[in-house]
Image (tube, rainbow, N blue to C red):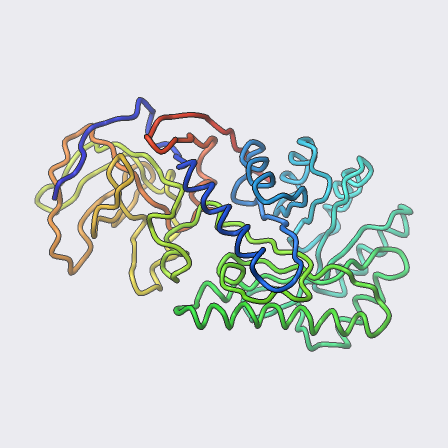
Length: 384
């Protein structure tokens, strides 16, 4: 196997790299997909993976939107500091977080929260009454049994939540996340997931509207479904997020190719165990994460797929195991590929299983142009 064994980057490893043009191509693909679908949906990109002001601005500019989705109130606060004022906090609300929500709204941020149960609805309604404010709320719908949410056909439950919120809070509508789409295996299954997601939201919001609740927002979000939908009729916004980078889980279900993944971890060869067929690197799970999201897919990519320093995928080379600061690279079991002779000091790139988990291990993105030249460093933050 011919491998570029140079060390072209004067960068301390492990480091988080972003291929700028791949990222921009991924954004354009999403913009075109939503624009081509039937309906009139706006973008509300999910920035939970990104956690970077510079990258957030690039995303929203490319998509032509100022509306964003977050998964922590720290994200909401930081992005509000950057001028974003239309924010959806897409994790079920709890009483301990309502003071922070109220402070953001007092700053002029139109922050919307989410619930799927009557207990939380009562808490929000009580807080709004006691503080003379009207916090906007979306009811989370369970569109595929993947995670949280109320059944879209539970009319009694939906109306009970709506009735509880109505006197003091503001019922904005409904939202869902079709996480079950991550288990799809064919384009047909992905399209079916997309329609199931849309129909679930429309059934739920119809119940609310028929009962006299305006519920203007119908919000969906999932990279696999949005990129495979043909019809967004009735959907006010889409909140997908991981498409910005893509990852090996997305490649495993056919949403992208490994060559589309804009994110990688630069690592350095630090040793060998030749009798075991191992190359040892300085990128362990602290750099890659422990995520093994491809383990249940047709192709198990271990802890990440290996590329040379220029980003070219090396066939059947994976990070087969990972300790805290050590990565073990070997040839995939069953493959006839040969492990290349990579001297100590050689650089490699690792494509991640799950972009959200891998980015969370790092404090900045090192941005590369198509020639592999560093053109920017975008700080990222963490925490709740």
